[in-house]
Length: 442
Ligand code: ATP
Ligand code: MG
Image (cartoon, rainbow, N blue to C red; front, side, top):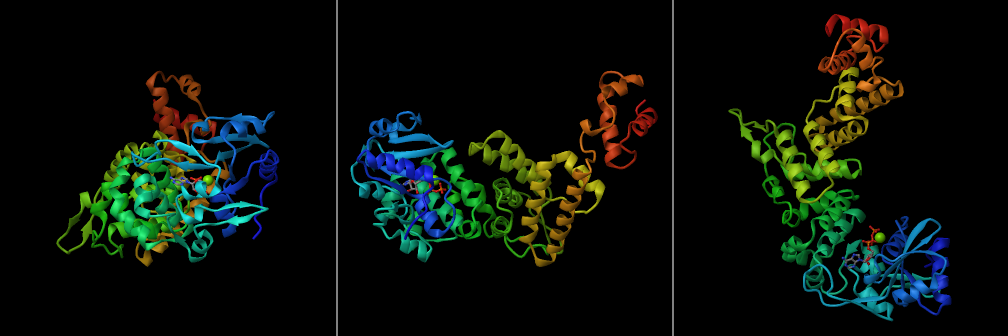
């Protein structure tokens, strides 16, 4: 099989080979090329040592930040290309990083340290695909299989547990049974993984093609780091809107939503507080009063603990707080929501609400239709440059001063005018707003 290699990558490989070294593309790009999807980037593995790589690229911009781990980054046609010396990892004593990095002359050593068979292939146009662990067969069987003994590999680096779940969701592949058993057995080791590394894989997992299968089967694994998940599992909702327990509903809502990381993250946590506010009434109906606020608070705690950036924490908190509003296709309602949330978060909220409602009983699909109408209406309002924020008003603070308002009153008058425009009590023209302010703000 021939694999397409972009011109700037093959030029780098040629330079390395002309200097007498072996060079291959490796890992994700070989996997994705065989699958027929476009690789995110192309990584090169080479028999040269880092200093030797550097000496091949005189005149190039070189970033040598990863050099201790054997990686030299060459800037080629505006793109960063990582070139890594063949490595064989030393012993791991902390379940995270090898104690030492040892370089090797053999590609086979380098492939043996890689996590999964589908990620342990190399390619060079002269040799073709080098696949010592059956990666192609596993791509065909759609299986995530470890290179070597899964227990040992997860023990060396517990992040691989998350990576297995992530690739399963991203590719829609099953995890091989021995690897799955090892994941359950070794799950506590996830506590040794840094929050940042865990979170990065979690977001990729959620944003994958098939998060449902992973969330519904491996919840105990995620719960090692996010124990708030466990009370949701199997929790019957006793509600005419719901066909599933809380966690199953959450897992489906992620599966059925747009593949946008913040939308998926919000959906994973949107009902996480439900078990804490459950009540059953005399007719046997379940209620979760205020669950959106409790879930938003819990989500913020969880995301802070997982070291998400503060703007992500704030956004997810907001999306969860608002996810439970009733969808109404009305100009005033849509305008008010855009005003409260901002345009970007308004559209994200609509995607969150669609995922949520698609994972309920089928009659809730009517709501999805209404949400689509709200999206259309929002697009119209935005195209018409409607009024959503103070700076969209046809008057300013100076105008309020000119009618004799001072200090705090100026801001309050503008807020009042924005409310009035949103509610269509006045038009957003200078004349109409000044009149309205004269009548209501003084
Ligand atoms: P993506 O397309 O998402 O970038 P990828 O397979 O390229 O997927 P990377 O995280 O970029 O994943 O890693 C590149 C390669 O390095 C992997 O394909 C794998 O061979 C190897 N690798 C990465 N992380 C590990 C790990 N923790 N343990 C073993 N091998 C790893
Ligand atoms: Mg990659």
